Image (cartoon, rainbow, N blue to C red; front, side):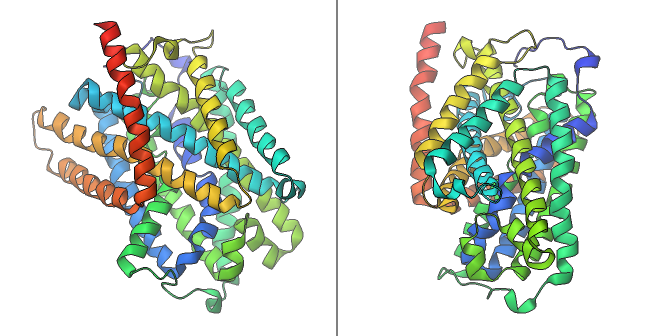
Amino acid sequence: MAKTKHVSNSKKIGFWSSTALVIGNMIGSGIFLLPATLAVYGGISLIGWLCASFGAILLAIVFGNLGKIAPKTTGGPYTYTRLGLGNFPGYLVAWGYWVSIWCTNAAIAVALVGYLEVFFPILGENTFIAIHTGLGVIWLFTWINSKPLKTIALVQLITTILKVAPILLIGCIGVLYINLEEFPPINISGESELSAITITTTATLFAFLGMESATIPGSNIENAAKTIKKATITGTLVTILVYIASSIAIMGIIPQEALAKSNAPFADAAALFWGDSAKYIVAGGAVIATLGALNGWILIQGQIPMAAAKDNLFPKLFSKTNKNNSPITGIILSSVLASLVMGLNFSESLVKAFSFMMNLSTLSVLTPYLLSAISLIILLKAKKGKHTFKILTACLAILFCIWVIFGSGIEVIIWGVVLLLVGIPFYFGLKNKNA
């Protein structure tokens, strides 16, 4: 089990901050660029949203139950897998999850630039300025995450409130402006219905990555055994409501061809029925959303390797903390990698760059999700009493993860396997060093 320092209650975060971390990490770049990514599939993408939502609920329940079994730990999926399956699977989870985080942060930075383009058109014309804008934001939040946890949690709570408002506004008020003629045919992708549903489920699951966020800084959460489960499930349900309402509105407002080419679909939707001033308001909300997501994920990118380093499964430098108990070395190294991924994948098409990093992030985190669900079954069987519903939920979550892995596509699977294999020599190197 990961070793943790004692943290006084005055320095811990409660239910609302934990829920904000869950919602804030999910509602970010995913929802704001996904309508454009999914436009080429047609109305069948709504089925993909429903499937991803069902899978997210299953996984939220799984992580909520794990948080109750091992509440005072740091590392979330890594720690749970290590408890249930041992060191090597635990290491693979830490490695895969860590890779997914800096890929996610790169994707968030790309999405952020897309929405800043509404205010600063030069970002769409000059790649050099666009890349350095993304880099600047990554490093701003790297600095913020060197501060005390209460400060980080406050930033997350504020940005979560500010980001949810414009999305709900589009979803609720936008329904009044829906033109049924704008809804695309059920399947325009050229793929079979099953294939299209699988692809869109994989794509939309990216928007739910982060439902496990409250489990990761578990040792820093008040009354963790209850708070983690409540925050995880509440945050996931709120996010599902926001996603589905807004997605239906967007698809019924913007013509399919225009939506597929949009770098800022929510802002474009608002401009259609409220004028250009509304476009800027929604784009501002989207910028805040991506900033909040980046803040939350940069927090997480230091916590996972720190937990593994304390168990001698990652290099010791990842366990180094500053005076605010922030694992600053791990955060900085992760931000360097996120910056490289963003720079290498930035192209003329923001949507294309975003789509690749989105799928790679999803695949990289599915291994931690899969092994966490398996670990829950093992840990439950070791406990006395009947746990039929919990085990059934975990089994369904396992099947969902396997389905989405196959839906990621061969190119993304190859990249994911390569990234996972790259980490294996480091494990055996550290094992021999610590022998």
